[in-house]
Image 1 (cartoon, rainbow, N blue to C red):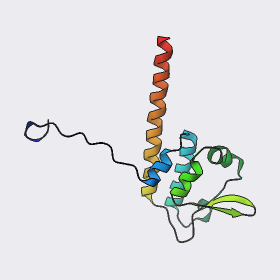
Image 2 (tube, rainbow, N blue to C red):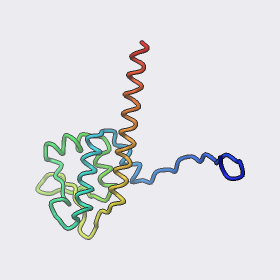
Image 3 (tube, rainbow, N blue to C red):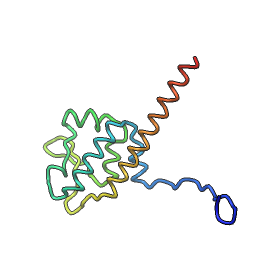
Image 4 (cartoon, helix red, strand yellow):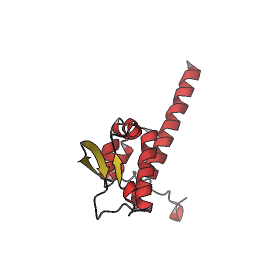
Length: 132
């Protein structure tokens, strides 16, 4: 019960920002986990060069980020830039730019939302298979 016996109003959810929308567009839990790890490492140790650069030619990175629709777009929305180094694509945090924990929280929120969506979809599939 709200103030004075009135029921509180149900407001529609806030519209996601461009960064939130880009990260939420990634529908692979493995890709979101990798994005989280890369952004977190870069935010925690901002001056460490090895965390500020990701080679997309790396087989594991290519399989998870490169082949997942929207993953590279999410990284660029978070502040990384797509560049060429030695003839191969590289995601780099530009010099003078630093990632912060706010961006880490955006990725964590997207990860939690995706986990809930996947769990709900699995529950729905299990329920429909029991009815059939």
